[in-house]
Image (cartoon, rainbow, N blue to C red; front, side):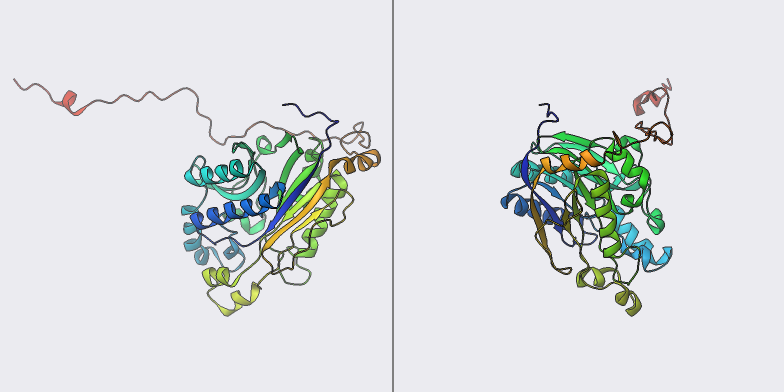
Amino acid sequence: MIYTMSHFPNFRVAAVQASPILLDLDATIEKTCRLVDEAASNGAKVIAFPEAYIPGYPWWIWLGNADYGMKYYIDLYKNAVEIPSLAVQKLSTAAKRNQVYFCVSVTEKDGGSLYLTQLWFDPRGDLIGKHRKFKATNAEKVIWGDGDGSMMPVFETEFGNLGGLQCWEHFLPLNLAAMTSLNEQVHVASWPIGLPQEGHLFGAEQCLIATKYYAITNQVFCLLSSQIWTEEQRDRICETEEQRNFMAVGHGFARIIGPNGEEIGTPLAHDEEGITYADIDLEQIIPGKFLIDSAGHYSTPGFLSLTVDRTEKKPVKHIGNYKQEIVTFDELQFNQE
């Protein structure tokens, strides 16, 4: 089905604020599916999940050196999401069962490496695409590799044009320009927690400002989804009192933000596990586009422009096919007579 530019529906959206079962793939998949069921039962048609939700964000990278974190990296690697897999099948079934779109951020294992990836499912249960974080942030580079422009999708659906980014990708002006050029209308902003230290660039206030800026600049509805930090996660990876004190319980900041930057979702406390909802009307985007469309009438292509390369980038290219020839044991036995 083709959805035209005259299609501006009203519908309910949801952003999850919840903790994973840290470093436990199966348990976090089951929890994710329960949250999809819950959001759908409350009428949501598009559902957003936090960054690195399955099987949890690798917080140990901020708590110690590589030697300290290696045992946790091994657990993350063994609990990462592979495509295809039973884990993805369960997520697919949840989408189909509830006839919803949802976006969940996972640690994806592809080949021998890990990537931070948003997976998108549609009401038929199809995995319709994925977005890998273009550049892991600071210490995250010891965990995740880079994405590329081939995994920067915006999906045309009956609920508008759906897209997403993760965490500090919202701070990069070129990312915003590339996404608005795809005429995105509903945006999933996946974040971890906002660190409790005052003035920290990972703080909830700074991350919320970045997401509101994204909503206003690109004239989209933003579904900001975040984790919360729990005692269970603290017990899982914190080995000293200093580490335990660094990670304070709570500090979620899930919101739903309109194209004017206003918060329109049902409120959640920072330490509350739950789902925020809002009923949105895509027609509200039109007045904003009248004022500013940075990829259209408000652009200045005569002297400022951006080239987006959407081709897949592979570090190793294989030319031709390897022909495997098997010589059986019997063929190797020489006739001694």
